[in-house]
Length: 221
Image (cartoon, rainbow, N blue to C red; front, side, top):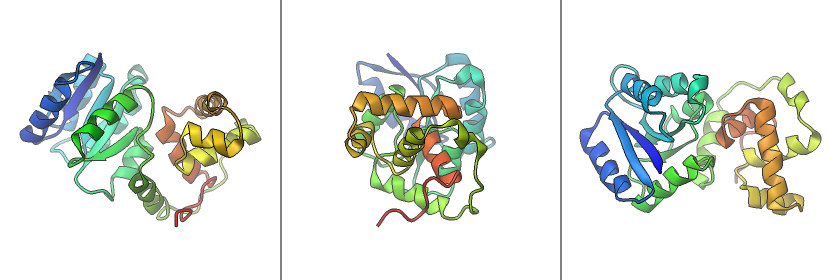
């Protein structure tokens, strides 16, 4: 059973998501929060698999709450999906940098929401849709020119190559096809790279790929 916490200051939004998710045999809404402080408290008490986190909430906002949860080693297994009204939200890249596993727009199709919860609970990041790629490029382009990171020295040439492809938004299967290896081998390279860099998940690899200069903004057409 996938345990989910809903964090949004709009009661009707939470009610709609709860009705949809609770109708699934493998998903349970374990708690609801109306602000970031409540979300952090519920994360620590319930240890959910996934938190659907609104950014704009009173008091402690979703961005600050995401940082608190992601920095707590006891909550390593808690994955955060940012909920936003706009596809190009100025805070989303900061949320990914802070530890979120991806984002969804609030008017997403119900089937997409359910898929997102299952995917993130399984360890995947919500970074495949083209709009998400464009968002990351958009805000990475505003960042300062990255300085060489000594953390890259821990990676083999193959792992750097794999992280570059992850940063470009490729799935394990697409990476395998590009490198002419098996999907299992591609997954192993991704996992080893995450461990060496201390990344929580694939989203963190994408952020690091940009911030370290491995992937340059503007690679999309």
